[in-house]
Structures are given as C-alpha cells and as structure tokens.
Length: 357
Image (cartoon, rainbow, N blue to C red; front, side, top):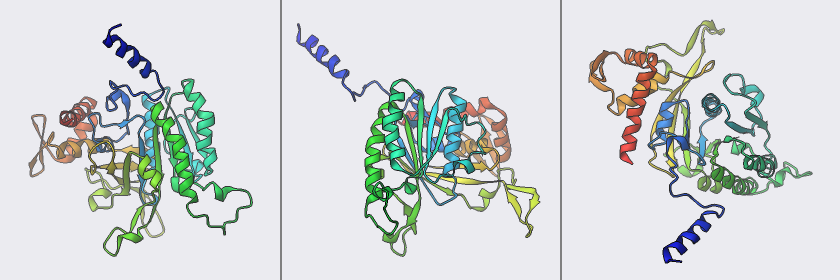
C-alpha cells in the first residue's frame, strides 16, 4: 500500500467520527441559510446570501413592546410559506402565547409548536431527552425560539419549598450556562437556528454619559450566541408614515381625546455584534398590527438607493435601471408592482456583498 493510499484510508475513517466538519460545506450558500420577510433585516447579516446561516444562534434585545416577538413570528410565518415541511419550536417563558397568536395567520400550528413555560428542565432537558431522538429520525426543525431568556427561572429557585425570600446568587446565570451547553451542540450539528430574546436592564456601569440601559446578557449568552441584534421603535418624524405620506393611523376610530388608533409602527433593527462578519448595519421595517411586516418595497428602495443601485439624481429624481423616475413614492410603487424588479434589485444588492467575499 502506497503512502498516499494509507493517508486516504485514515482520512476516510476520520471523516466518519462524530463532529467532523466537511470543508466543502458553505455555510453562506443560499440553501444553507434561512431568511426573514424583511430585505433590510436580511441585509444586516452581511454575507453573500443575506441570510441567517443554519446552526447559528441569534440574540434579540430591545425595550419592552419594541416588536421582538412579533418579528420572530413573522420569520416563522415566512418559514411556513417557503417550506411546506419545515417545523419550529417556540418556548414562551413569559407565557403569553394565547394573547399573541392572532396576528400571523400564515403560521401553521401543526408545524410550529408553542410552549408556555419558564422552567429550564421543560426546555433544555426536554429538547435533549425528547426532541433529539425525533431529530435523529429526521424531524425537520428549522428554528428553536426561547422568548425570553430573562424570564427563565433558576434551577435552585424552582425547587419545592424554596421561598421567594431566598436570594440565590448566580442561580439563573448558572442554569442558563448549563442549559445552553445542552442545547447548542444539538442546534449547531442539526443546522437549527436558535433565536432568543433578552430584556433591557439599567446600565449602572455606564456613568452619567453612557447608555442608560443594556441587554441583560450573561457570560453564557455572550459566548454562545453569534449575532447580537438590537431592536427598537423608530420614532423619527418620517418613521410615522410611509413614503407616500400616509400615517399609520385609523381615521375611523378615535378615543375620548380624539386620538386616532395606531395601525402599526416602524422598527429599527441593528446588528450590534457579529461573530461571522462586520457589524453595524441597520434595517428598518414596518409592522402592521393587522398584516404583519408590510411595505417591503420601501425597504428595497432605501437599501438600493443607499448602495447606489438606484441613483439619486437630486430634486426628487431617481434613475432606475436607465429610466428617470420622479419621487421616491413612485419608485417604491413600481417596485411593489413588479416582482421581477424586486428580484433584480435584491440580486444586485446581494452581488455587492458576494463580490466583497
């Protein structure tokens, strides 16, 4: 046996060991990513496919009612639309599922399973003991969601007879550390995207000039999650209306003070930190309380204008693939009415990152 054949023999045997990584696997190939319904949020992941690599872990954080849970559900709705077999698990530690399930009608509840629990053993142990065997049999789980890590109880505090007056330092952090050690090897090896949220807490270390709040992360989350995404309401004057000047209000309903009912709001989504590429990109999405994520055409317009694919001629004029168009609302209207134009613009946008690889 020649030396080359010996090496080939040992190499093939080593390839069969658990945990072997195929060097030909492209984590950023389109088929190895999942996508949100928002082009501008896909853009912040800063890779050639503008997608979330399967097996990665995403941590979302922001003020209360900023739209974290709504946005996650919009991702699950898109998953159901794009893949008729894909499944997901959603653990709501704030136990609000029954009150939040009416908006996204496209979520197939036979394939997206919600669980209201804040007990760590009902999440981490159940996934290891009950879900893992199903995954080994081929169950097509694409997402596991924990919303939120901040509301998960500590192991010691949940023991029978434990009083709320007993303060167990580090209990929740240690519980989360142990839980993620169980969960992350499963999600990474099985190509499941882990999405979690955390609350914001007072930032006492920032001093008088620093930010007043910070994400409630632990050492385990800082090391275990790959993408750190900040979500907040966009409250600038231009964020209260669409490009045509239509405000997100219901003219037909007013309260006792004459205030109109809000029908939605814009959300700013920023890639704060990333283990797999540059951080700092910002997406802006519009959330309708009735229809979910809307005005995708506005996102495409703003992205392509910012990157020069749509040229700003000044004085309200734009160049759209050789044609002069007057007004950003008109450009957005053309994008909305043409799926082919949407696809071309997004392909050219992705090409900019592909060329940079």
